[in-house]
Length: 263
Image 1 (cartoon, one colour):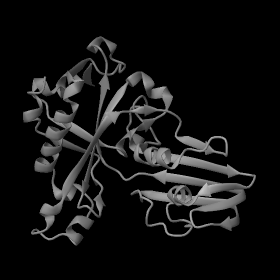
Image 2 (cartoon, one colour; image 1 turned 90 degrees about the horizontal axis):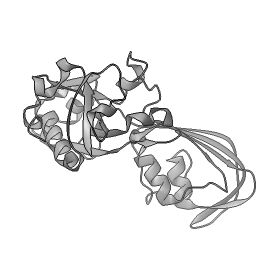
Image 3 (tube, one colour; image 1 turned 180 degrees about the horizontal axis):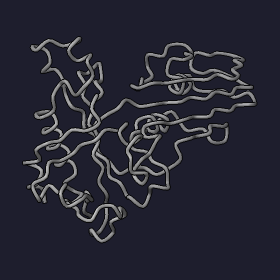
Image 4 (cartoon, one colour; image 1 turned 90 degrees about the vertical axis):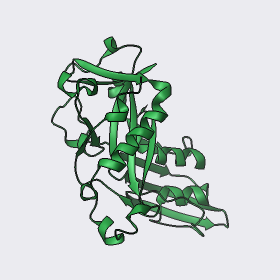
């Protein structure tokens, strides 16, 4: 199935236009109400355990991300971005080496992933399926070339973007000699359409592995009201392996050169 970028004619790569790569946060404030999503990259968990329940220590530490830790938390992955935990009630009955028993517990966790560069496309059989009335043109390539496309686009961003377009902390942490340690992490996949709020109860408790996937997928989750867009999203994050450097600008304009040959 092809991946389409629906656009205005003057923004079509094959008509000589530059490629605009936006940011996750840009879509929270974009003027077009049909494209704006004020909660891009945000997620909320409501945790309710009224009766005694034994929870895996790693599961609990993963969910709370350091707000409260039980035992050794070094074996639990930490996720970048802001993490706010509101503990309404937390009654710990017993702690064990690999678990914790709680009851009468109500916690709310709000997660906000770091800003990142992002390109949104749509997967449709043909251009006639265009869900965007404001766009009359498009360019596309076969979906099986998505990895090659993301590799080429990542190279363009790395080559053409200015360091001044990213967080000032880059220049505080790196000299001209060490700036080469920066790399661009690339992820691409279909968008997952589901509610961004999850209520966790004893009957609806995701496993440790499922919770990791939920945290990993937050940048690729949108509400079902957008499902007609059938979005395939490309995400690019600048990092030195320890720190992530968020974009300061709301978009980049790139010379697409090597992208126009993908068909």
